[in-house]
Length: 599
Image 1 (tube, rainbow, N blue to C red):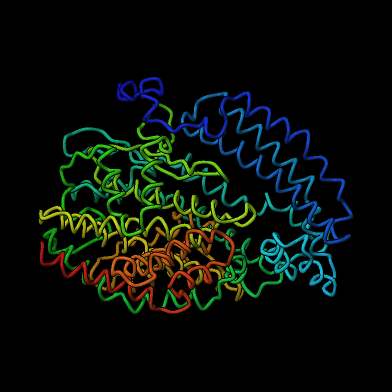
Image 2 (cartoon, rainbow, N blue to C red; image 1 turned 135 degrees about the horizontal axis):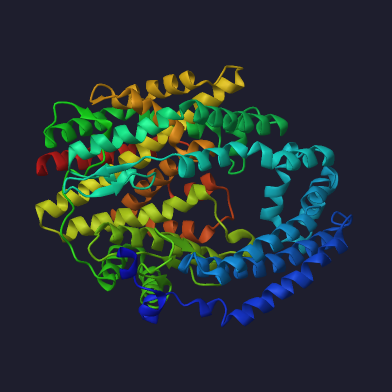
């Protein structure tokens, strides 16, 4: 019955949908481009064996690939956005599948290009890149060339490619087990209604004010993990083994260093994050104690750490009102930023509301010289959706400035930088809302939200990052990664980050087996560094520091033209030091003091 109430695309006015005709006027035009790609990509073989012949030849093959990539990016962008509109539409599914097959063929046919670039002798390389024919390709060529010590012989590369699917099997096994085979049952809520407990609903149960319901959800959820703990531990163990194997095969000192190499991030940055957060644990413990007192509990437990201290405020914010709040909060960034974003949001960059079959959640998605579209499932009675809009708008404007300022081959920025622009916007929204409100309850709600964001992003993700480092070090030292080892190492971290403020249920040790990020290691630290950089940069802009806005806009415009640490340093934040982490912890402590007073 509920699904019948969800609007269809036909029920929604065009003004509330994104306008994909800005990508392609119709599907016929899209098919023309796909046909062009299909007919054109085999020409890449004309350069096989000739890539290193001369700088002019290298420039020719790079430009040819660029024209292909521009078309591929655009047709895939269109197809993926259509599929996000309705994931059950067979035409949309078929188009995405068609492109995936086509891209596989393109990748296979052009796979000789990078190895031939790597094969150019060192003594001739400098002459190549100094040639005017390659003046627009110095940055991507540098990124390709620096991988040279870690590229293997043709036969070795073939073996690694052949083994890739088998090496990644642990991830599929984990996903199928936890998302399909494992059954968590149902729960009866306070009103006597039966609610399913799943991987996705578990977190929503922990937000409920009914403590008995939270406790039952926690125990029932982890009981199912306990029944499968040895199998999942084996999957995690082989995930670590695969990381270590790939790193050693490519001549990296460790799996951590192999992961950091692409972004040119030294291990000292990773370790510095962990050390700074460890030093900043006392304010976290103070917050947990405030939670215990506000919730009137003798002992705080893990399932008490997510329920908001301030009940969800009653608010009704229309989408146009949300646009106003976001644009007003971003006024410090100047007229160009706010005008472009306002035009896009009032125009048709954004697909605003939930419709039947539409992808859940929110995202920003773009291609070169096309609008940076935003998918929302906006609800007027969910105040947090205002923050979600600001977050995705941050991504979109990052891409907009980057695409307008950089060549196609340099505009795409890495994940290390992506979360800075989005969380920066959330910081400005928080500041604006706090300045705007005189309601103590609303103020407490906003501050509590920011505190929990910092806790979840800085403290929790850093704890995860520390766990990833610990278990990979055990494998690299020849140790055994058994279930007991995983639980024991995770227990140490829980005790360090919770101290005595939270009673640690033995079941919580199993959390280390259920975090999907652990099967794609050394990624989560970027959430913590991104937030820390955003806090530092936003504070400089909000304080009116001379040149801060210009530097931040320069960050947005730089795209992927530099490595992340250099990009952020030019913007005004040095992530090789502990200062951005300390500033974020100081903000956490400042907000905590105010929340204690308000509550």
